[in-house]
Length: 294
Image 1 (cartoon, rainbow, N blue to C red):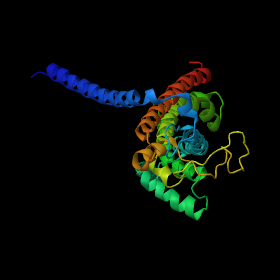
Image 2 (cartoon, rainbow, N blue to C red):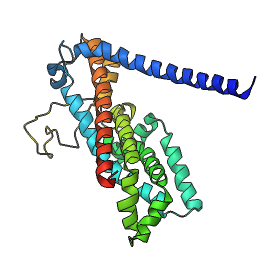
Image 3 (tube, rainbow, N blue to C red):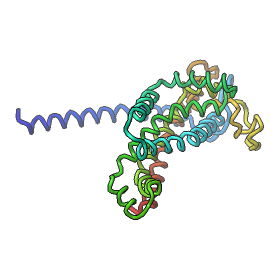
């Protein structure tokens, strides 16, 4: 068999594998959406959940998911951006840098249950935050930091070195070159990593069971004082998220329409992640075009 036939066979096999993977993922998403979308309504998205009655919604759980995501990203994005810039632009190649990269790789492979138990011991018990949004956000920050830091570092490294030389040749300092030349060029890759991290956080359940709690207290959406326990902005209250609610309904739910609630909540979770990804990619391209005039 000559080399051309081998190349065609190998290419066909790779296309077939890619098609199978896409088909599996598309079938899974379609199955969840077909089962769940008929149960989605405005009342379902805004009403609180019911424990023993038919007709409960996911309003509080949906709000908790977005609020926890925002708090986590506010904490983790600046830290990971600084760490990625340091590792890519300033860190010298020595044993300490290799040790930091190895630690990041190990942390990124930790199971979410382990991160949740770590968060429970440190933030819930030792720090005294209890089951709360801040405990969940800090645990997810440890969960998210390794991936975001690695993504920022790789995105910055992908910028060609001639652009750094051009910035320095124009009289910019090293920091100004990084800030005004390298980071804008790497912004699409960084935003993609942030998006993937956000989607991972939005769908996370295991780590939050041990940190943010499994109950969703009633909230007063007219009270925006973050110090009040019933305020939606209070970060020291328990916060059952959408993913935890799905797990709870399927494992110990007592409502008569539990399967319908689970199907509808799963479809909302998938749609939210898809919508968030599409919107963020669109904004990332717009921002990159504006900052680089490309």
